[in-house]
Length: 264
Image (cartoon, rainbow, N blue to C red; front, side, top):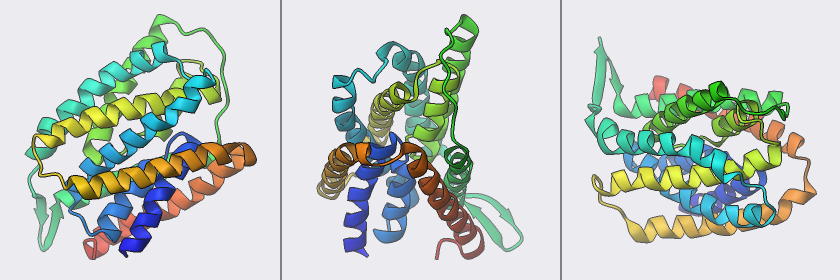
């Protein structure tokens, strides 16, 4: 299981390099099901791994001028505040048993992984369907929508430990009017700063196994360097559709497993 987990860590980075998002879709299942971690530490570690890998991945995007820092900060600053508040105060305040119905206990684990699975299924739809590019000028109304989405995605990122790339990219394309390549690079920038700041909230609440965490992060960084090299050899549309179907199957499997078998 651990060998599979280390291989999966490389694939986290490859996915981020190829698609500009989706790393956390692999990270959390790898940590929870292969390394047998508890869900809250797993979401914290996911933030660090995906955040570190994303920031390394923006280097070639920056050189290619595929990052819009102004839009990234417009979206990212509200998201940063939201994700930090969520990790520092909201997640620790959620009780281990959220709700009990007869013999069924709706636990914190089911809540977090259930939300994560629903996020996977929702984002898989956008990957399979594809997106259209827009080039319209961004008005004040769209800036406000961008800020609101930033807060919402920050909250979701904090709750489930997911970078939210496949939510961020549509917002950047549809609301900010960024071309897909620029939206992908800007998404990595937002994911990086979002995830790492969110993780600082966990450092204050959790005991971190730094050697293990840094090992997984290093393997993921190697993966994103591989992914950046491979991206020119594949059709981005076909990659997204294939990964979309994989994400839908994974999300459905996690949802069924947690609800019916309690993660066994």
